[in-house]
Length: 413
Image (cartoon, rainbow, N blue to C red; front, top):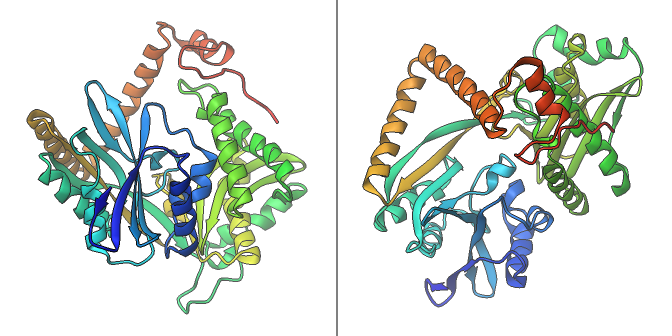
């Protein structure tokens, strides 16, 4: 525990079951001005097991008897050293400080200083908002403890405002979607059959709707070298715990769009404050004539406008084209990568310079993305240790379990 003055002190928690940590999380969730899915208490309590190999390292600042700020980080063992990481990649959310009052730079500096720097050999934190005070504070404190590296732009998180230029809520999605064809998506969809937009009315209905989302997600990846992550039963169970925790906290927004009783699209999202977070989405890519993604988005936005107080639709991190087709702005997300070893820090700075050069040359960036996809395909085949191709590869991936722990069968609801 580190003392700042007579009133403020900082404490690092390494056990998610600690009662004082839960008390701090609940207090901050109730009184903090800003909420993100990963820093809310229902997410922590629903998923007490962190990603494999990661130990919790949660820093809490106390103002007297009550907490005033929290940073959710983790430590991952790599060979002989520990790497400071962010666990928000599970939810594709941002890493930020959950605070009662903004602008407390002294508190944030003290929270960064309280981390166990004697054990930390590397820092790899992605998804820090560019306007977050955590960016510069973490970089400065890490340099003070002998780490070198770079802070750089790593991605964009698109969002769509549900308010017009006058600050009034749109009546429906037709005011948001651009183009005459986009504004008539629902009318065209209903001509093809009986449409229904289903949401859970009780906790017992959550699993059935989640099964539809999992099935659609797995269906998309059939016939490819890389199976859906939801073919892993362990990952499905983690998402179920998150969904049930969000339902208990009143933050769940789960829905499935059906046509004549058949699931066409579905998504798992969360409502926190006046913001909706778009976590997992799956559509039936076989029936392309339905424009499943755009049609589902129109139904989803209509539901948010009619039944919630949401003012912003946050797509979270991702470079999918539909997100940028229907967004009104983006958040810049930074990444902090640093190392205590001089050679590693030089490599980091070189890779960052290469990234910036590629972004300035679109053709080379496209070539790099193509090469990366091919390397990922080769790596996925190498992990299952079988020099196979064509139909034999398809059968091995989807007709038999293999060493990575994924189950091959598609779980149909």
